[in-house]
Picture 1 (cartoon, rainbow, N blue to C red):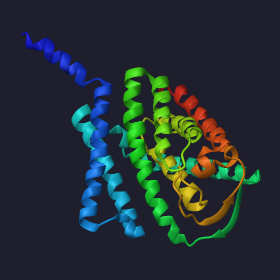
Picture 2 (tube, rainbow, N blue to C red; picture 1 turned 90 degrees about the horizontal axis):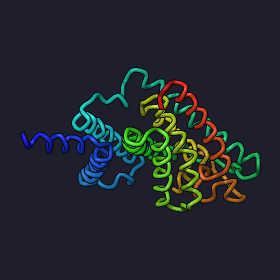
Picture 3 (spheres, one colour; picture 1 turned 180 degrees about the vertical axis):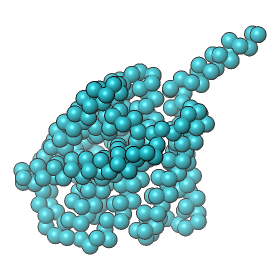
Picture 4 (cartoon, helix red, strand yellow; picture 1 turned 45 degrees about the vertical axis):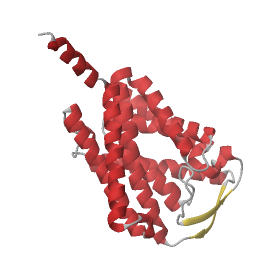
Length: 281
């Protein structure tokens, strides 16, 4: 009989969102790292060929999804509703449209103010490495940031606190990227942290946030040739960017610009309003 209180206490600890967060994040990251090591052992570095890089990205993103599904099934013991199939394509497509529209409007504002000018074209083959980056970052980062960090913090601390903390963490992890600054990380926290978190809250699934994340990175880097979170990429369009970093985002990319912060935060607040109206807080 004396074992029952201890067993109950262990159950409470095991079911605590923070403990589950400490289980889920290493499971997903570990699966990705093991997959990457296995890939290199069999086929070498994926960057040796663009199609190899794309295939490697698909494999690692798939492993992240499988690891998340395993965590939800084995640890939380529930269906993986965040990746439910009915309506998945529609939600993903809406996210893609929002991501493409938001970055295109951002670049248009920067160009109208003299900060972006097209100077030439690249062949379509340059799109493959950027597509690989967009697929991997869109799936892996959303699983970690929204599927695990935001969702479990929300269970523990409530929607508003979870949104603030997950947005700050998401933004300031980007300080590790090339050409990052504190202002760039703050911009990511405000614009992307709020918007992507709001999309998850609206749908309670990851498809729309993944679609926006993918499309934003692919459009910014692959089409407009602008650095993606500080990473230099080749896009379809040769361009020159000039003007203060507040306008252009500087070497980090347009997502660190004031136009991006205003546009994406406005959309994010609108999505939050819709989520609140639907009772999803």
